[in-house]
Length: 319
Image 1 (spheres, rainbow, N blue to C red):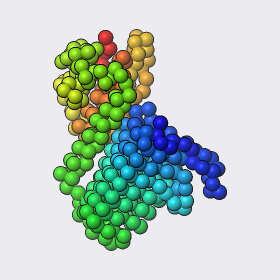
Image 2 (image 1 turned 60 degrees about the vertical axis):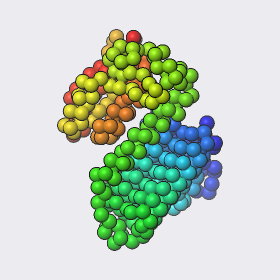
Image 3 (image 1 turned 90 degrees about the vertical axis):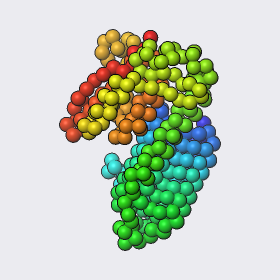
Image 4 (image 1 turned 90 degrees about the horizontal axis):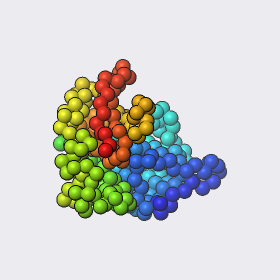
């Protein structure tokens, strides 16, 4: 359990005492303070010594695959709200696949978009940071809206809209670094979850004890960890299929079924992956397979415009 994982205290402005809601695939370190109406999406990782406190400004939203690193503080004023991507009002909204790095402060009312990077000790207060922005170290962003895709250099003070509008665009190397940090933290999330599972730890220490063969061919999906490093691998033909579907602009979804449900074709819905970046999609799929070792797993390719399935493919069959 987190150091403090509790409802918000009753106050003159909030009597509901809402509790955090945490997706099953998220990881919250025990030495984290998590209070009040905070929503944590799928595959979120909350690192040690963070304080996420929705007791004054509320609610908070933290989207799928986002990492909140050591020492981050997230809080909000009683007054003032931003609109999240679901058009609901929030004190703090942080989108999916975003990095809030060590010792950063996000103080509501604040909006941070999808696939953003907020650097060490930077502050976002009463501000909006658009999708795909890169904010480097020790920056201050206050009382402004940063347009999507912008780059905020280290030490910058952005407190007027004119300064925000003059920012240059982030380049591809900055985005690649941000994606890499997301992937690293997904591996950490998987590792922390594994550390609480004796069988999972044993598979790292003794790769030959896995349920499948060492080359991953027995279940048609992956191999087990080797040499202390995660090496869950999708088969090459499945990776090629995913790559092709992403290039076509489709989204990847997952379904699962135990043996009984599989026999009658009754699949249970898994996540629809929000990322369009191949490495992130593969990381998330591998983690889903790891979390469902005894289930059949089916890959879906979904046309987001037509909202129709373009492909269904079973990618894991348990022994």
